[in-house]
Image (cartoon, rainbow, N blue to C red):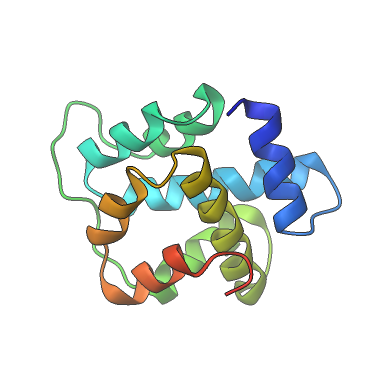
Length: 133
């Protein structure tokens, strides 16, 4: 999947009015996910996405580290997306679900199952809900 197709899918799924809003949703969601999942897993996921999209996952990790990712719950996950995207928390949860649904499609589910498995149940539910969940 190419960058433009990825952003277009996010814009459509999240019902966003502009590509800029879709870019912002992707950045906010993937930077937050990059903080939460183990670094090696973030790298593996990033490698399967369009380069510009994957870099959002890498931006928040500590290079050269092998850490397990920060520990925070769903409320913090959604709050971080909201702050980064400049939206309220219900909208942030919806944007996160839409972005992660497109990530799953872009990777054909191959790595997102591992990503979901690395998360606590409350965040895992958000990752697997999809844009209509």
